[in-house]
Image 1 (cartoon, rainbow, N blue to C red):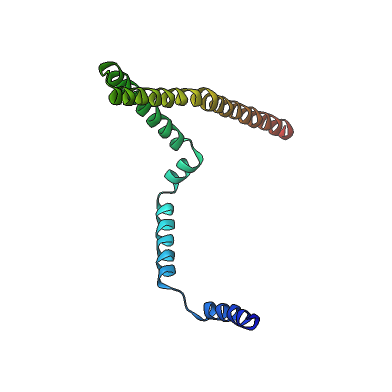
Image 2 (spheres, helix red, strand yellow):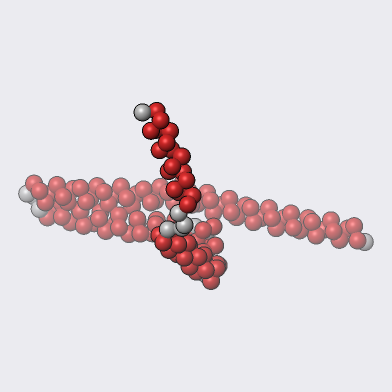
Length: 142
C-alpha cells in the first residue's frame, strides 16, 4: 500500500507539468486582458470609484430610499388591515424600513460627517504646509 501511495504522488505532479495550458485558462487570460484594457480606457472613473466614496454614497442613498419606502408601505399596510397575516407583513415591513433608514442616518452621523471634517482638516494642513514651504523657500533665496 505504501508503494502505491508513493507512486501516485509523483505521477500526478509530472502529468500536471506535461500538459499544456487548458483552453479555460486561456479564456481567463483573454478576459483578464480585456478587463485591464477597459480599466486603462476608463482610468479616471475607476480611480474615483476606488479611492472616492461614490459607492458608499450610492449604497446609503439607496438604503435610505428603500428604507423609507418600506417604512411608509409597512405603515399603510399595518394600519389598513387587521387580519393576522397582512398585519404581520405590514408590521414586518414597517420595522425593517425603520431600521434601514435610521441605520443610514446613524452611518451618516458616525462615519460620513467625521470623515468629511477630517478631509477638510487635511486640506487645510496641506495648504498651510505648502504656504510655509513657499515662505521658507522665498526667505532662503533673498
